[in-house]
Image 1: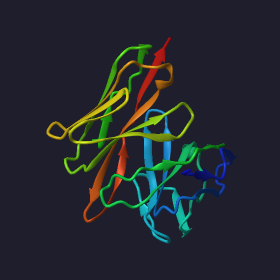
Image 2 (image 1 turned 30 degrees about the horizontal axis):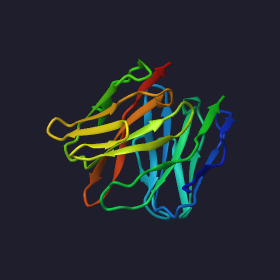
Image 3 (image 1 turned 45 degrees about the vertical axis):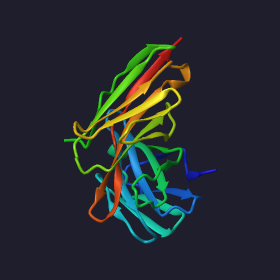
Length: 115
Length: 113
């Protein structure tokens, strides 16, 4: 069974803290993604990775960085958390298919509150 | 302009009703199309792909009109368990590399008894 896990379901941090969100998939997928989801704004892509040690900026990368040292793990880092980064963070993975029809499998999400 | 536009709803329908959701996309190079479903406080999951000729999966029918850049999802005989947010999703290729998905903001459906 396909599985994407995220390190925390709920997280509370203070402004200025460095925050690590971890995502692990057990499907040997090449592609991994980090999104944030906010009411009325939908899913927005922060960063993605098509291979180990490879990363690309999505639509809203400012204030975030990522790390992919191993194929199964993709970490999202908030260098200095701010209140406007309070959100639901969703990790996803997919396997490479040339057709573009690959399914993205999502983790359960991390609800981050920055005080 | 957003890549994918959806009517946010909410749609409130009785059990047994037929309901249709629409979606438009702006990039004519869009290659693949999907509907995802997201239950309240859960992650999105693939509901179905959308093929050029239209396709059906039980009570769900998806249609694609490439000329109008329009996608639809029809749900027949609605069940209480269909209550969710439905996300219209488009894959846009990037040159010769694999594309990425663009998600609409979602259409909220509530089915009442």
